[in-house]
Amino acid sequence: MNASSTSSSPSLPRLVRIDYARLFAATGDRPILSNAAPRHWRLTLANERVSLTLDYLPNGKGALTPRKGQLVVDGKRRPSPENFYAVTREYHHPVDNDGTFLRDAATPMPASRDVDQAPPNVRQQYHNLVQQLPGREITVGFRDGDAWVIGVSSHRGDMRLFYTRTRYGNWIVDPVYALQVVVGGQDLSATAAKSITKAIRLLKSRSTAPVPAAGSTITGAAPAATTTSTQVRDTVVMRN
Image (cartoon, rainbow, N blue to C red; front, side, top):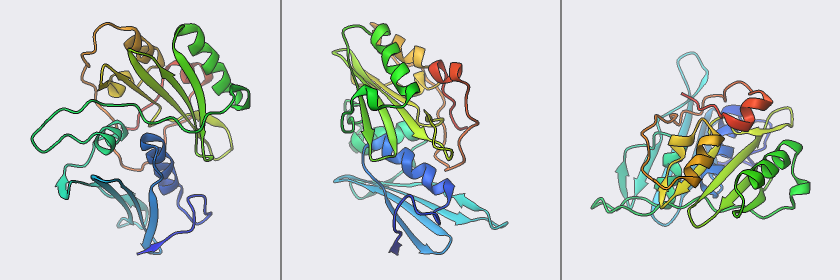
């Protein structure tokens, strides 16, 4: 299998480029990009215990289509993660074969940047969070041109808010992997997935019991339509 040049290569399908950036944002590790044939692309994430592989192949009509991901933990196949929040949990904190629960942790923050260097909407959200979450440590980070990240840290828990760049060069809250919130060792991102306000409420709440919520499947489909400025501040759209 031959490795492709870079994730920004003009020949790389937008479908694959989007999932590359989202996997990078979700885990903090850069996927390995490769292709065995002109229209067979593969993304692979791997650490000491976990390997996740996503394949993209043409369907019967010739359109590039994602195939169900393959997850291997400690050398054994497991069901594919249902969404990008599950990817983060399985990649960094896989449950042992005996079912032992391991505490979840937020994705590591990228290199810190001065907030004044961030795009205007990222700066505005940063200042909103400073007002809404007094006493918390709030920072801004930038990950190799792929994502701006706002991080919130406190003794109660942590939050990450991810911004991705559109084809027009604008930075928006990622329509799929928009935010991550971990409280009391539990990843409650799926519960808060559609609202920054809910994520803030979870950080302030005394209870850490998660409310079941359906996540988006890792399919590599194109992101949802761009939200309005009001929606970006409060609501994030998941891919169903």
